Amino acid sequence: MDPYSLATRNTVEVVTEAELRSLLDRPVKRVYAGYEPSGEIHLGHLVTVNKLMDLQEAGFEVTILIADLHAFLNRKGTMDEIRDLAEYNRRCFEALGLSGVNYVLGSDVQLTPEYELQVLELSQEITVNRARRSMDEVGRQMEHPSVSQMVYPIMQMVDIATLGVEAAVGGIDQRKIHMLAREHLTSIGYPAPVCIHTPIINGLDGKKMSSSAGNVISVADSAEEIERKLKKAFCPPEIEENPVLQVLRYHVFPRIETVVVQRPEKFGGDREFPTYEAIEQAYAAGEIHPLDLKKTAARYLAKIFADAHAAMNE
Image (tube, rainbow, N blue to C red; front, side, top):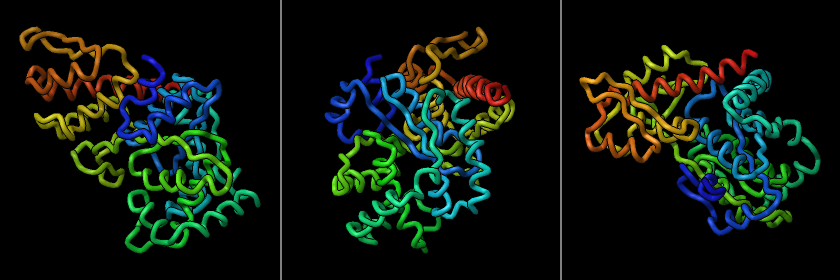
């Protein structure tokens, strides 16, 4: 797969595609994503993890910001609680395949006078209403936002300049913050970043993914737990918003060259699929039973996570 196809597969938006093509032509190119330390790493995180692996293969230097101060500002716990999770999250990312990348703990770079001054400079340009709107999809308890949550997006903008990256990766829920960065970073002498946005996938019940709702699969889950959860997953005949197909599209096919649906001969025997599009078409045509689709997704996902478990226990 060519670098541009790698960089853009399984994305919902690139701002802008022309800028990304130009960036890919550079001998040195840097991209980052930030993650708040907050519990187990699950399938929601893994969408951007897989995208960063694509970008690394496409020639980008990758930086992961373990955003402990952002988690604190977003009401995710005390700093002690958050720091306990930070190192565990880093080990999860490495085990899932993000090796050979630069890991940065937010509080190591965000408490300098230079960083704080840039945050204050940008805070003069951005209205409270604009800052609040940018947090609508990523903030916690936004019906009663705190002042700290208005600082959050401004810090995220300064992170881009501080880390020295030309591109930012995030779910589409990060779009409003990224657009603020494109609009305002030039005022502190830093160019507008290329922004690469991935989809927000459904929870296993077809609703919004949430650890508290219990509709996620996490990296800590055993093969038996993954199979149990996927067996109960919502899997309608339709393609759109089907969480089992999303597992295959965003988690299995980026890592597995050919996917095999294993079936007894009386039900048609095994079938091989070299691409996600091929298995989607077969499912839409009624050629694959939902239970077989679930078992296939569970088998490959368990293998991916088993490799991660082994790497974390080395």
